[in-house]
Image 1 (tube, rainbow over the protein chains, first blue to last red):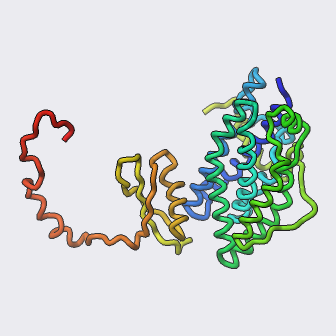
Image 2 (image 1 turned 180 degrees about the vertical axis):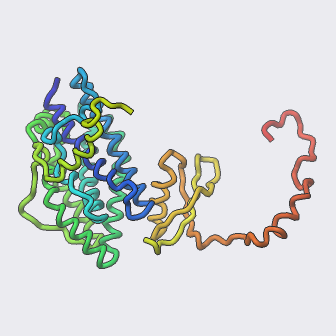
Image 3 (image 1 turned 45 degrees about the horizontal axis):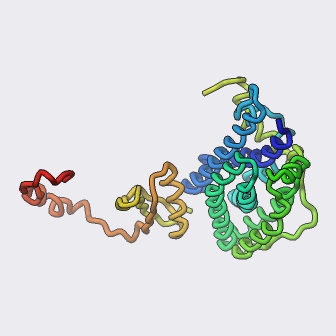
Length: 250
Length: 93
């Protein structure tokens, strides 16, 4: 069993799971019926991608491991998602800013990952790209609408971008497992995507009449399993059924 | 968002078929109406093409005039092309 490969997959898949869960919270609470459905569609896309990754992990780990045990029965420090995706839905601006900052990265990552020597990862990446292209179109579109909208919407989306900016650098952080997988030609080298990422993000922000934040210090930890205070609450809700009624099925 | 205008959505379910009206939604402009239509009306593979039209642009017949508008056609069965002998080779008519 290739432990580095499993850790590497968690580093990608857990982002999809936790962001999917965060978006799922908005089901029935979106600002309009149409955006509500759009955000939950994105949530379901991400959870679908998560399943593909976890099914592969279950296959690699063997034994009693299933996609469900992988999703529901780990403890907090075993989830390797970035801090960005666990940030709360403070308002529609934060949900859109978080989505946008993630989508630009996600697409760049998948475009690399489709060249992976690992056939499963390559196939998952290829299948997910079309979904993520749409996610990015949706979130970029809203960044422009809010940024170039009213004074109120402009200020609120700028605040959200400023607050979440501190979590962007972690997207390009590599764990030891990530580095090992890059050397084997399995993992995508995220360090090579960084310049392109900040350029693309800045261009869209500029088009939205928004400022690109300039900061020196960035927050990280999620990829090492060290999460923000929000993560415990997310997992409590996510894992509730399996923890309360172990092994329950529908 | 309460002030967003209403749009009518037409979906073509597959190439070769016509666009059919499937519902309406709110959006601030045509681009957003298209995106919303995609999310609301094509999540179960319903379509290959979408049209959106501002509802305000549709001129509708007045239901109060339904009597003189539609009823005169009801007893004119001869307007249906059912009085022709079709050759046997002709199928699916």
